[in-house]
Structure formats: structure tokens, C-alpha cells
Length: 199
Length: 178
Image 1: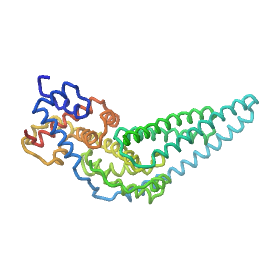
Image 2: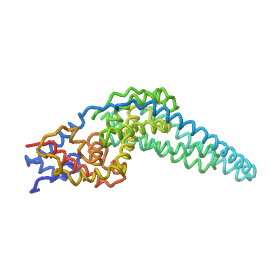
Image 3: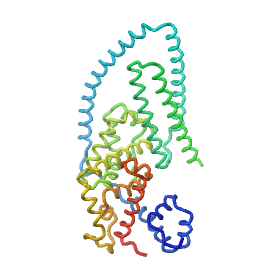
Image 4: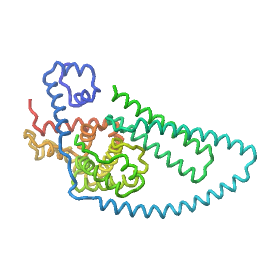
């Protein structure tokens, strides 16, 4: 490379995304090596900036708004419960009209559902065993874990809603299957992080 | 990175998930400085940072029951993500766009002595809100360009070019000389 590196190229190098030629250039060019070092110094200075405090304590405002929101939520929940009760009654009446074959098929689905639930419990135990101690993790790993946890929480909400409304076992089963898949990925991510830190 | 000692233990996290107000206050006390610092580094004004702080903790109170982690480390990452999202919402607010454009266009020519070494905090505050957010999230908080692009609703190359331009400006404003 017969020219000095641009800031974009230097930042790519810093982020370990740069080209080999760029790396070789920095190793041999005093000016670019200096610029590269300046980036590190600048970032170190940014990271060393002091933590700041909010001039006002906002907890009381947050608490009041949260409590008010919870009250509104309780009223909404009461309405939803009424609708859910009506839906359950409708499902109950529908279940009464099932044939014997349908009942047997449902029993199979219930058994599959129980297996997914058992697998989910096993993964929860495994996760708890791995996730007991706070460990150093990269920002990307933390973000991946947070994303997986969000998705599991979202599926959990779906399971809670589907169970409350007594959805068909195959629908509930699909949600449990998704939960097990996400839990498996979450456990693997934690295990990889533990292994990495251990190494 | 201005990381703070966090005094929320697993028990407090579990209690906060049940909606216990004392536990939620403990979460607020433990993380408010971290959240305010992140918001203040990204938002254009202290008032915006305070608003982002309040919105962040309202969201935390509302959503913590869905938070699946049990250790403080994962809670920190979750809290930071909410804070970054709330701060960026304020950055995207229409009223700042003109200011950003002015700063982008007028940089180095309008009232800024590029040869003068300036305090890092002052220099940071002189960047456009978007550039400052990218610098802070990438270089200090450790977010990847993909994550920043996702948070901002922009492309990865947008995030990279903002970072590169911001470093050029920081270097010029800080008067770093060979």
C-alpha cells in the first residue's frame, strides 16, 4: 500500500476488520502508526470520562407513573379475564362434542406437549447451574443473551396467553417447542462464554 | 468505560420481577448513574438525558418481569440496551435535526478554531448527536456496528461512516499533533 491509511481504514484495523495490507502498512509507516496509536489514546480517554449524576432524583416520578400504570393495567386485565372466561366456556362446550378418535389424538398431543415441557425444565436447571456466577462477557455475547432472553420472554407470554385461553395442544406445543429451541441456544451461549473465560 | 459498582443482588432482581417497589427502587439507585451517563453522552441536552433516564426506568419497571436473567451482569446489559434505545429516540426527535445538519455542514468553518486543543467533554458535545451516539455506543459501550444500525434503524455503513467522520473531527478539535 503506497498511501497513508484513511481514518475509516484505521478504525477497521482497530476493530480487527482491516485488510492484511493495511496492517502491514501500519507496521512500516510511522505516520499511520502514530494515527493508529492516537485512536487508542482517544478511546481510552473517552472511557476514562467520569460517570455523571442526574441533577434531580427521578425515582418518585417514576414510581408514581409506574403505580398509576399498574392500576390501569389491573382494570384492563379484569376485562381480559372476563373475555377469557367466556372463551374457556366455549372451548369446554366444544370439547364435549369430540369423538373418541379425536380424544385419542389429543392425548398424543398432550404427551408430546408434556415432553417439551419436561425438556424445557431440564434446560432451565442446566441454565441455572451455568448462570449462577457473574462472569466477564463481551458486549456481543451480552447482547446475544439479552436478545435470547427477550425472545424467550415473548414466547413465555404467548404460552401464558395460549394456556389461559385453552388453545389446542398442537398450538401450545408449537410454542413450547420454540421455547426449548431458544433455551438450548441460550444454554449453549452461556456454556461457550464459560469455556471462553475459563480458557 | 465509566462502569459503576452495582449493588443489586439476585434476590433483589427476583423481588423486582414481582413488582416489589422497594426492589425496583434498589434497581434505580444502582443503575441511575450508569443510565444517566449513557443518556447524557448521547442526548443533546441535560433535560433530554433526564427524560431518557425517567423513560428508561419506567420501561424497566414495566418490563422487568419479562427479564429472564438472574445475575447482575445480564441485568446491566439489559438496562443499558433500554437506556440506549430511549436516548436514541430523543436524538431522533425532529427538533434536533436542524442542529445536527448545521453542525455537519459547518464543522471546522463556523466558530471553531481547529488548531486549538479543547477539553474532551467539550469536543464530544460539539459533535452532532448522531455521531456522538455512534462514538459512545461503539467505542465506549462496545456495541457492534450491526447493533448500532439496528438501534438507530440505519445501515451498518452509516454507523461506520459516522464513526470515521467523528474521529476525524475529534482529532482535529483535540489538536492532536505529531
